[in-house]
Length: 167
Ligand code: ATP
Ligand code: MG
Image (tube, rainbow, N blue to C red; front, side):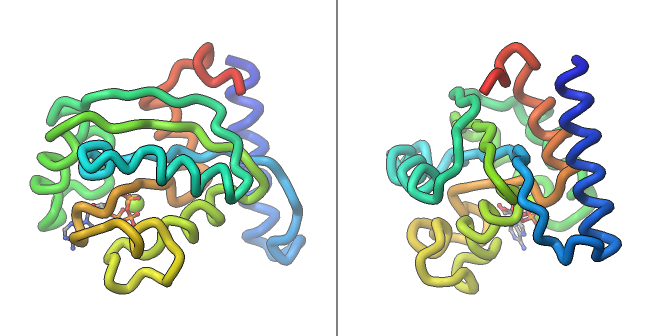
């Protein structure tokens, strides 16, 4: 528990430092993020392709498992989107089959992994990104990544116990 709280605390400080422009956003610091290979990626047997890109990018896979969310669990996970037009559909999709959930670790991994995923809409994603390469739809976009330090702490805790997140 202490290790988890310390990590959340350090991620928060890192966020504040960046926020006040003290570091110009350039303090190299290891952080963690939650990555998911969504049901379309698992169903299309793209797990190996995605994992290869994560490892090539230099991220450490601290923990990894296959899960299948219920509709209720998917709604809890994407609760920030409650009320949006795509909320029902995306939570149906996320509970439609198994996912691979992972904790990634590395310097600036939250932003770097978001960049590697590419834009939500694969048609707007840059060349070389995972979504550009494999997504077929704005919803069925293969991968998920936390969008900030607080979100990462919540999302990691949603799927992994402290014992599983050993590194
Ligand atoms: P994620 O949170 O899955 O990493 P993201 O941060 O790029 O994706 P969000 O805005 O958080 O995008 O949306 C969460 C997910 O909801 C998207 O990845 C996609 O699967 C789905 N989604 C988002 N916008 C739309 C939309 N306009 N229509 C259909 N589905 C959408
Ligand atoms: Mg998001």
